[in-house]
Image 1 (tube, one colour):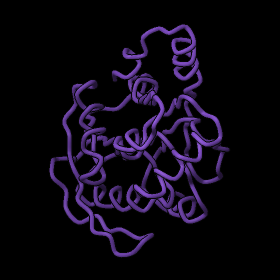
Image 2: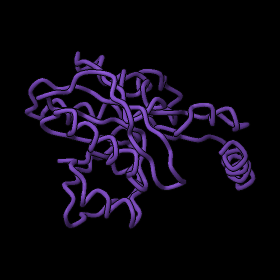
Image 3: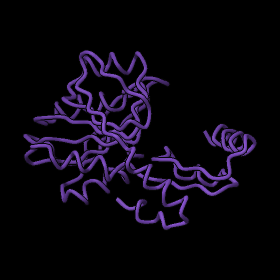
Image 4: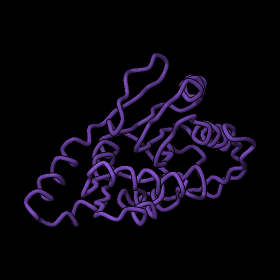
Length: 207
C-alpha cells in the first residue's frame, strides 16, 4: 500500500492538484506521501448522529480487528458505551476468521465499527463470532462501503441486521441487505467553504 499510495499522490500533483480534501483514510500516514496540503476529515460526526437515533439497549461498540481499535474507541467514548475487540486470523487474501472476543456481548446489541469494507469478510466473520457469544443484535458501521460481488453475497448470508455507511462512494440499494447510506455532503461542503475562505478546518477534524 505505501508504494501505490505514493504513486497516487504523485499522480494527483502531476495532474495539477494543489490541495487535497479526503475522508477516513485507511492509514493516516498516507497524508505524509503528499507534497501538497492534505485536509483529512472524519465521517464519525455524521455517523454518530444516526447511531444516536437507534433504539438499542445495552449497546457495545466492537472493533472487528486490532487495527480498528482507535476508530471504535472514539465512537464508544462519544456514546459512553463499553468497547469490545475481536481478533482475527487471515486465511487468504479474501478470507479471514474471527478467533477471539475480548469483552462481554451476551444479550447485548453490538455495533461493529470499521473504516471500510469490500469483501465484507472481516465484518461477517466477526458478526458470526459475536452471535455465538450471545449478541442479541448486530449492526455494522463503515465509512466506505466498496462492496464487490463477494461482499454482497456474504452480507446477504450474514447475521448483520443493518450496515450503516456514507455516500463517500456511490451505493445503490441491494436486495437482501439492510443498507443505510448517510450523506456526508454537508460535512465536505463546510470544509470546502472554510478552505476557500481561509478559515479554520480544525473543528471538523474532531469527532
